[in-house]
Image 1 (tube, rainbow, N blue to C red):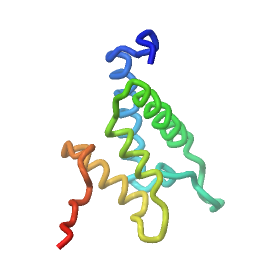
Image 2 (image 1 turned 90 degrees about the vertical axis):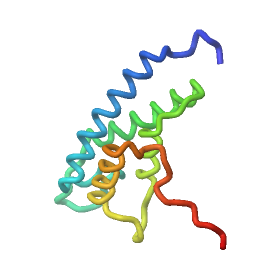
Image 3 (image 1 turned 60 degrees about the vertical axis):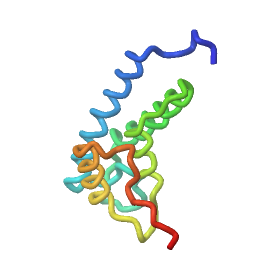
Amino acid sequence: MDPRDRMDSEQLDTLSRAFSDQLLACLDECARGRRGLFSELIGGEDETPWPEATRLRELALALQSIFAQQEERNALCDEFLDLCSMHGESHPGERRLARTFLERIEHGEVGTPTVEDKKPW
């Protein structure tokens, strides 16, 4: 990468803080029952779109790309996008995901494995 294309650390910190602030606000709302943070809502006439959540997912993707170009990572962004990719019957609901993610953030556990590696014996 051309050194002129690199963002300075202050700009990256500002982007990271903006993402973090918006993520915490959305996680809090999701933990209280609002759906649509980790994926687009499908169906349901009573479900209203959540534009802030849509923008947050878009920001996370853009931020992850920027960090990758800088050969860096943002653990909070990476973990949020991982949670957004979880779908299926065996996965917890959005409310539980939001509460668990908030707890991990509060305890400083973001960026660490969520499940310990099992020994092969």
